[in-house]
Length: 434
Image 1: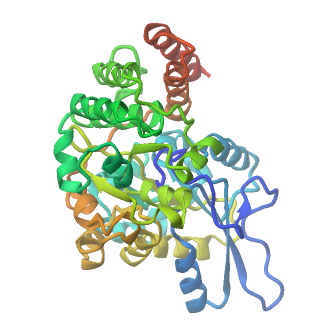
Image 2 (image 1 turned 45 degrees about the vertical axis):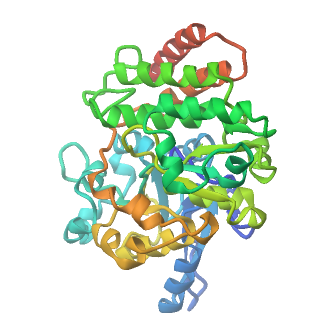
């Protein structure tokens, strides 16, 4: 995810059979004599591994895989994982780490198996260079995780609501509506004037995160922290530019005000209460899961306003506390291989970080039936190799939460944009200092 992105940045629900992340326990139960080794995989969001698990277990009858998850809420997932790592017990044998949290976990590399000591170096060519480098410690001597996905951006929209508003519905024509974010606002105002009964977009936070990552990626390559780990929320033009653009969107009354990842947000999908949503590749699985079968063929995918961008991406790591490190490492290698990343993409949409997978016809020529047969391979994969990552600092998740909370207060009419900006800066500084 993704998926992700943060994937508060991902789906709010996993398959019903998935055990809750909050379940107490430890990674990798000791097998009964002669029985299989149980590997616990801790994830957030819909990473698309269910069929891959079955395939792996069929080829490895001595391994049983159990997945735990909390939907997409990193504010729940990360503290629990941090607690387990500090305690030396409780974490899964394989754990997903979202890119915005990676720097924080790399600060304590002793908690993870160094994958370079287990043949990972020969896999370097299986990942985009920047994706590989993200998981290396500063001295380059330890690799704490193998990359899963990246998050190329698009804009997903409901063609039935566009038709109701008298707007074009074909994806190429829709893309032409909004080459810039100001054009997106103008389109939203036309949609609003049509009184369809739906909002133009889901919420301010998703749009803000898309714009700030896009703007930063096309400029300095960082947003909340610079590459020297200095907090620059109030001095980085990319952050303020994204803020101002988001405030323009809110001032136009285009937001449905549905809190991302909330129950009302999920219900809004099912009830067709908004027409567009910022859509990194992993979000397609979220939309399908939330909107349900009845909305198949009513969603489509257009280009994102502005110039590309990257939102989301994760890694799989093996905590040192695992009692089955060798087996866990092999599973992580399989899930992040070209075959594994293609399987995850087909299942839930997270875009591979594996160059070989990105070139595979299974990705390049793929279409998504749920999204009106949108050519997702061409939409997302075509520019994946040129994606520009945004550097994430040591308290990125905590800082991001405070900034987005401030955005949310404007969305709900609780603060003016300038009042909320002051809150964002002050609260971000407090979060970074903890």
